[in-house]
Amino acid sequence: MAVLTEVSDEQAGALCRLYGLGELDALTGIPQGIENTNYKLMAGGKRYILTLFEGRTDLSELPYFLTLMNEVAEAGLPAPRPLEQAEGGMLTEVAGKPAAILSFLRGKDIPAPTPEDAHGAGAFLARLHQVTANTSLHRPNSMGVASWQVMAKRLSGRLDHFAGGLEAEVSDVLSELTVSKPSGLPRGAIHADYFPDNLLWSDGAISGVIDFYFACTDDLAYDLAVAMNAYTPEDRPDEGQGDALLEGYETVRPLTKAEKAALPAFLTGSALRFFLSRATDLVFPPQGALYQGKDPLPWLELMRKRREKMGAAT
Ligand SMILES: Nc1ncnc2c1ncn2[C@@H]1O[C@H](COP(=O)(O)OP(=O)(O)O)[C@@H](O)[C@H]1O
Ligand SMILES: N[C@@H](CCOP(=O)(O)O)C(=O)O
Image (cartoon, rainbow, N blue to C red; front, side):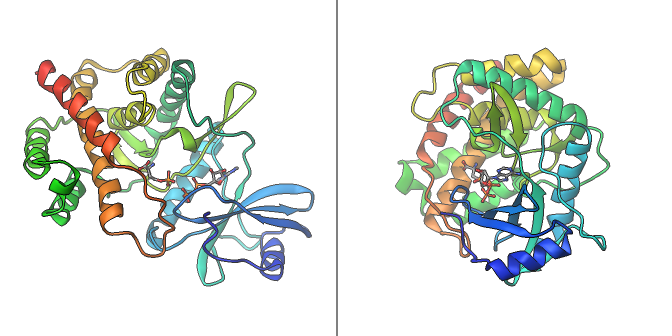
């Protein structure tokens, strides 16, 4: 239940005036999500999303995320469009939290995507990259390799509780990844959290891509690897969703030779990244976010599979 901050009808009414939306019709909390508070806001007969940014989102980075979403929407892809206040500015404050109003996107996520769904998600990711590769916006990846090292260090003394010998294994993988770090690949703004719950579908087509709050500047092929892993079902890893997503991606944007060569390391690295972030959140539950305890272990298994293939590819 991600309504961490209550918003009164009075506060919502004031927001409607600030953004020139007409009369407030209704305000309903959205239970999905774990990071921020989201409400469905109905005003002047239209639907919007009201997001209150909770503790884990860095305030100074909000303009980057909102401007990026706006650029993607301007390019004709279904990303949330942040609304401007009548007097200018996208951000405001509600109940002591920074807040924005975003356009509402129709559709629902597909919790257990088939390989066919993954193929469509891959083609859409490539279209997204065609837009975000050209942005002038810049934000370093705060969840990149350096942060994996920080997380592993913070978890030191605890990793072996997840699996015997894991501390040494993670340290070995980190060294391998540092040695094999590719450079000079196509870069741009990447989504960095392209999981099935961040894509909305309607009538068999993608009607929304949401949750840009990990977006950053990085290699496009790394984003693809995150998505291939995220679409690999945790309980049925061998059904082929990852490969189908890659196939779909390449129907729109074929990978360069160098990107193909980098993919095994990116798949291993991104599996390690989500294992480490989930393990960190379990061991040190974040304050201010309503953490629902996502299981890190399937990502450890996936990391091991990906690492085997990385070894075979070198
Ligand atoms: N622009 C939008 N249009 C429609 N629904 C949205 C939109 N943004 C968020 N949602 C709904 O809110 C839920 C949580 O949003 P999300 O950004 O994933 O939250 P969190 O950052 O807390 O993970 C989504 O699963 C979706 O149901
Ligand atoms: N997708 C990540 C966690 C980020 O959560 P989100 O609700 O903001 O998408 C994971 O599965 O570990």
